[in-house]
Amino acid sequence: MIGRLTGLIAEKNPPQIVLDLNGVGYELDVPMSTFYNLPASGEKVTLLTHFAVREDGHFLYGFLSEAERFAFRQLLKVSGIGARTALSVLSGLSVGDLAAAVAQQELGRLIKVPGIGKKTAERLLLELKGKLADTIGGVSLHAAVDDAKQDISNALLALGYNEKEAAAAMKQLPADIGTSDGIRAALKLLSKV
Image (cartoon, rainbow, N blue to C red):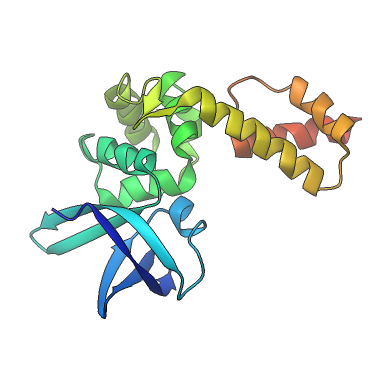
């Protein structure tokens, strides 16, 4: 019904924002991955949306990328997963990390997300298998892995390591490691040197 909204950010109260469209304020719940990448209040933004009608109300969810919205919709199809849990998963894991966890059946990665227990994580791995395969809404997993490597390298450089040290640590990391796990692993490797 409502697929996209473009307007000015009127309020930012995580995980909710208010988007002003010509004097009408739309409340949207967004994952933290979207929230952190929003421009400042008063700035213009375009968000892809998911509109949900339930007994207790009508709800709008906003996303900066098609990959996030696609993953959110796939999560909602999993039995026992509601919108709050889906937002929690996308707030705790990037879309690329989620797809990699499902592809490699990594239970531990999902359990780290607040609100996700062992049984829920097992259900997610089972029901999402093959649905987030190589592409998520047209975004290649290989591109997500490359982005993670770039983010890890940038983080190491920002922490004061030189390019040689960062490159040496990067070579020792698994090829498909996520950003946050990669930074932790790289820092452990560099602390041993």
